[in-house]
Image 1 (cartoon, one colour):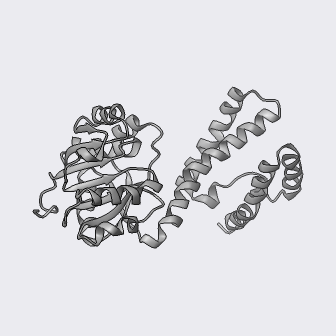
Image 2 (tube, one colour):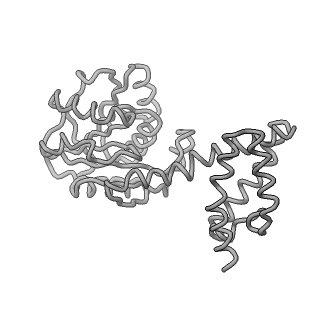
Image 3 (cartoon, helix red, strand yellow):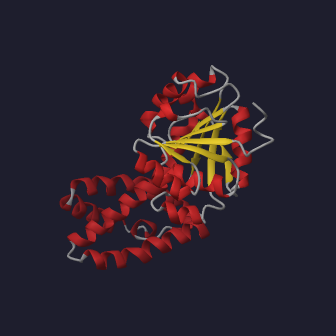
Length: 283
């Protein structure tokens, strides 16, 4: 097998082409980074839909139909990474010198250790983006930050490939994957949950959900804009930032009475917000 770092038009197989796999596959195909070969999903319909989205590839729904590729990308659920790696090895689909990487945010490349023993270069790649709308993301992927970790040979190949699709690369350590991914969960997933809690509080106060959305949108949008423009401490407003702890205490009681889970959430945010407010006073 020739050096993959000198010729990036090598074959790419994608296994589990859901939202992440489709977006990355489309980027690699459109920028002619890799030659998109087989796309294997559980159903032939799903695989064909992925191929149609990416504009390249051949749809299959059984690993028995796969041929060895220079690069294999696993975009399967986290609990299927090791299973998929084992299945590929059992079928002789991973050759020494080839590359195998997965796209989990929480799992490290060590999930693929069994392949590494046989001389396969392993890594993990995680785009730090929301994949709620793959079509929109695929059209606006340029500038996306992708974290990578793994063995040196795999990282050289992935770094070069990501640069070719105008992505920015951040290298992390395998032992830090879970904590790193928790940061993404706080910044994205839990932010959505927090907005939902805010909407429910508005509704419990008698405000229709549509109106609640209209009320929450400028607050959330401007707060985020201020965070990235001014910094977190400077962006903080509200009763804690003003030092109005009497209101905070009364509010805590009302929220607790309304919904125990929301009350616990409100309480959990108090210490870090008080600390942030103290930083704000020093600005």
